[in-house]
Image (cartoon, rainbow, N blue to C red):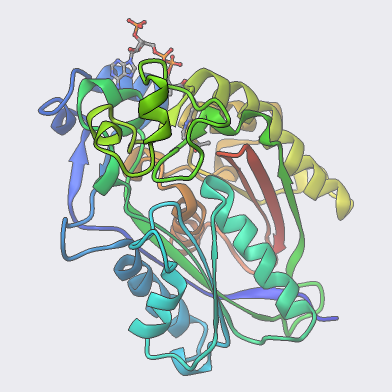
Amino acid sequence: MPLSKIAGIGKYVPANVVTNNDLIKYMDTNDEWIQERTGIQERRYAHRTEETTTTMAVEAAKIAIERAGTTAEEIDFIVFATLSPDYYFPGCGVLVQRALKMKEIGALDVRNQCSGFVYALSVADQFIKTGMYKNILVIGSEKHSFGLDFTTRGRNVSVIFGDGAGAVVLQPADKEGQGILSTHLHSDGESAEMLAMYNPGSHANHWGAKNYADFDDAEISDMFMSHQMIDKAQLYPFMDGPAVFKKAVVKFPEVIMEALSKSGYSSTDINMLIPHQANLRISQFVQQKLRLTDDKVYNNIQKYGNTTAASIPIALCEAWEEGKIREGDLVCLAAFGSGFTWASALLKW
Ligand code: ACO
């Protein structure tokens, strides 16, 4: 059974740079707080009307397809990870299929937020290994800027996120031992409400969503698509930052070690770790825990913020473009996010 390899990779980030100081126009925040807690200096925001999650994905995909030496017509499956789709439904995969004038291939959307890209990669990997498909486009893309709370009320969440897209083309590896060695997927729904966007949704507070204290029963029963939802800011993401931090710093190292030990490696064998760019403090904690030197961990959250499903393919692409990943390198991708879900992939580049 051949392994699957990343045959081509591409990224796209909007031209519009938004610094921490730019955010002061909208909310009570400051550069020092943001940098100290998250490491973020600036992020990109998509053009309000000309750039969407799908258009950014298409730009990243075109580069990945060209670098893989193939064409859009040759792609035989799409896996698209995002939490900020163009439409609530249908998913973005079909919009990519249309935009790139592809054949009537399957298109699957993955909704695993920050872990979305690694989950998507794992799904694609299985299809390649079984021989069902030969050329799979895997995408992570987000346009967060359309739906964040830019008032002081939402500042703990909105300063963190940015927009962008990354894509890879997965193909059967032609060299022995090259490609994705293993993927590892996990979830623990116990804390599903700790990092979530509850609406629009069918929950009617059934699960005890946070931030609902000032809703009365009548409002809750009328919750689906109501005015109260807008008036009470229930169309924005909710995050219990400290709870996310505590779980992330345990699960990141755990899932990285799981991937390494599966193939008989230890952390010293890693040439490049690409962590999901959640927060620079989380990445630094993971780096220390695994005793990795600075040159073995790639971080670009300083420039792009947290781009959720797009963060790993953007960082992987940038590291590769900068010549920091070379053939034969042991590369580990690791993610943690809403759900909670977490995942890793170990690759021989
Ligand atoms: N600017 C200025 N002050 C702020 C801001 C802001 N943007 N946001 C919150 N504050 C204030 C709060 O109001 C609070 O003030 P108070 O003490 O007067 O009440 C104070 O700062 C501390 O707030 P906390 O929420 O407790 O801040 P904390 O130190 O936990 O830092 C943070 C928040 C950065 C989100 C942190 O909890 C964290 O890193 N958590 C991990 C979550 C994460 O990385 N999420 C990324 C997305 S999820 C993912 O990708 C896995």
